[in-house]
Amino acid sequence: QVQLVEGGGGLVQAGGSLRLSCAGSGLTFSSYTMGWFRQAPGKEREFVAAIRRSGASTYYADSVKGRFTIARDNAKNTVYLHMNSLKPEDAANYYCAASKALIAYAVETGHYDYWGQGTQVTVSS
Image (cartoon, helix red, strand yellow):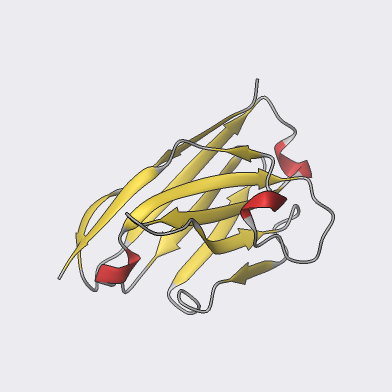
C-alpha cells in the first residue's frame, strides 16, 4: 500500500520561510518523479514543482521560481519543498505526488499516480 505523508505546514508571516516534507512508503521511491501541487479554496489544484527520479533535474511553476526549491533524499524516501519569501497568495493546501509517467514535464495532476493527504500553509500579510 503506497503512502505519501506530508508535514511541515503551518502559519507564517509574509516574507517568511517554511520547509515541507513528504515521506513515501510502499513504493520504489527512486523510480518516481516527485511533485508538489497546491490548492487554495475555490481554485483548482495547480502544479508547483517537480524533481526527476535521480534528483538531478527540477522544474517549477513560474509563480514560485526563484523562491521555492524542491529536493529529494532517495535514501530516506523523502521529498522536500523549501519555500522562501512567502506571499499571501502562496497560502493553500500543499500536496505531494508520485509519478511513473515517462514524460519530460509532469505538470498535470493526471500525470501522477499517488497523492498525499496534504498539509496546510497559511501566510499572513
